[in-house]
Image (tube, rainbow, N blue to C red; front, side, top):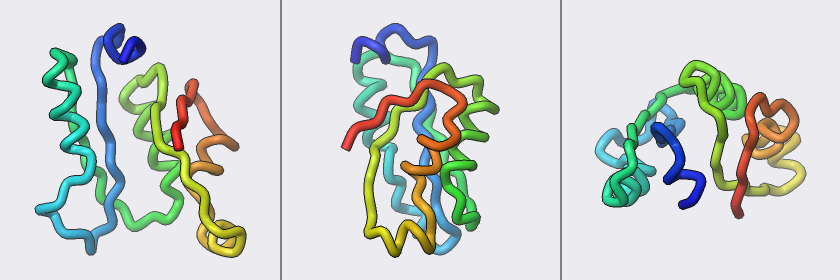
Length: 103
């Protein structure tokens, strides 16, 4: 919260596939929680079929002029990451802003 309290604005960004139901908005509960703490929060849902989620996140952060990226870090089996890649690994390999990760 200390980082967030000092921010001018907070953008909650989720990346969704086209086939995911539109009535389910993962991340909107986080936006509501932060807004209750009188923080300026905006929720953005990006629909993309591109498997390179890391590039989408970094591109969105650049477009928004983000000073920091805060995200969860998750690992998958080596085979799955080799075949599909991984957003966590992709962010760590090419981060363009400071990144705070939590698992």
